[in-house]
Image (cartoon, rainbow, N blue to C red):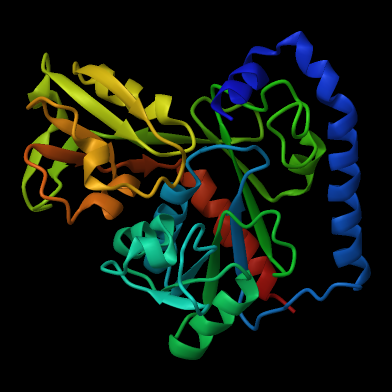
Length: 327
């Protein structure tokens, strides 16, 4: 899969062989959406506003940090948000699951546990988003639902759609799967309410700046060091995220000499995965840390990420929410 991604973003000409399959994929996507729009498949309307954050490409773009930022921003604005997640690769026998910061990520999904810790909001996970949202409303006093990575989950009606795009890779070669990275055609972006770019934005887009300046001890998150304090050291970089190169670049920008260890997104780590046969420090993402926090690793660290959004983004979001509440 990672080799295919490389070709998507280098515009390799041989991918033209996959365009017939991409056309079939686009047709299926269109038919599925039309089935929901026509009412043949039910779309669940909740009694509170629903804000969906997602993307139209395969791979990481920074959706989860943005959801955490939105939760904090909306709380400051007086809302009581709850978050729904898919619980991807979670092995729970029964859904939905109420998720806490200390929940088992193998049962409910790593991103759901990460969001519960980052946002301090109620979080529920289920493969079917309407079930997760209903569980939040039944067990918590939420007046707004944030859906993490739910742009293509049309069973849940939404009031506001936010699409997140990687500022470097953008839309790759512009083709839908499998000839390109698109889950939906590029014109889908014209239908969303807000387009956020993880990096430099064009006109009509909102830039999102990600910052990673510190490292937390995997076994004791109260132990924090400035990332630059490791400058010049040779370290192991571990990432099981959609775009691991971004994480490795962060470590290098801080002056670390990184031996890269990229794992598949949402990889279920075991302790031996991180036994590299030497005593060099191990650095990982916050999403990976929720799966490795109980390992007995010495000199292992995770790097939390914070984001900055322009004030006009928050202003526009609140305007859209106020408009939604108007009769």
